[in-house]
Length: 256
Ligand SMILES: [Zn+2]
Ligand SMILES: [Zn+2]
Image (cartoon, rainbow, N blue to C red; front, side, top):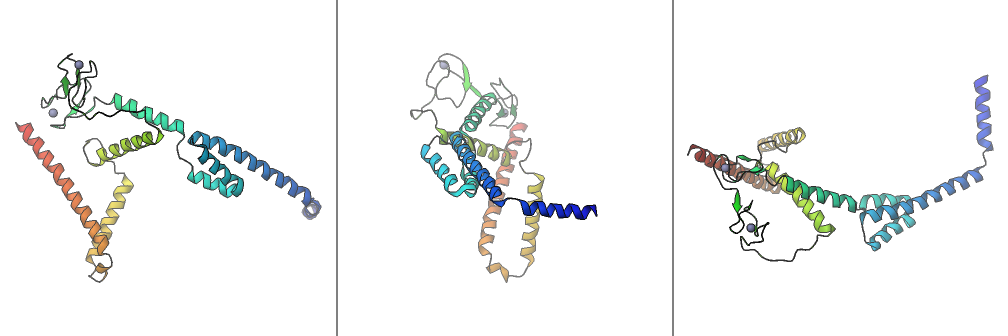
């Protein structure tokens, strides 16, 4: 009996709710949310771009489209804030400075340590001495960083402080350089391929083998794809060969 009376009283309560008042409260909450959203987008876009025209577009998006506009804003807004870009650039510069002495010998591939002037394995000269002041510096330097003496010819261009786009490009270039270094197996430390990638590759090669074993009916359809594959295979072959050649050379040098 207790449950029945409870349900009945619940139904009575629901039927007695003043829906006008309810909709007014709901509307007020929505308007408040809309205003907060507008304010937040204005502040957030200010952290991501310095262009007022862009910020106004984002703002109109929210004003006219409300929540869908917010979703669109979240998709199209720049992924990094100006501050994040600045710190990423600073970090990149600092790490570049910190690791400038680390690397492999260009001749024999032996690992170099900070302070090395000659390769400890093959005697290859890694740093140059400025003929004017005698300070040691990288072979790539065009001018002595200590006395300004010109060491090599160079194309002179006025260097300006990079803007955000240039910074972004530089960061991207560093990332690409890192990926290239790892994937070209120039480092002996680790390959960039994770387990999942390896698994994927083995599945792809299995599928390819299966395709090859199927009679030539389907071949016409994916000639284009095959062409692509072939060029990739050739590329891979060339890469492997060049790595092997390098290894052979190194071996010869070591024997000497
Ligand atoms: Zn060496
Ligand atoms: Zn000098």
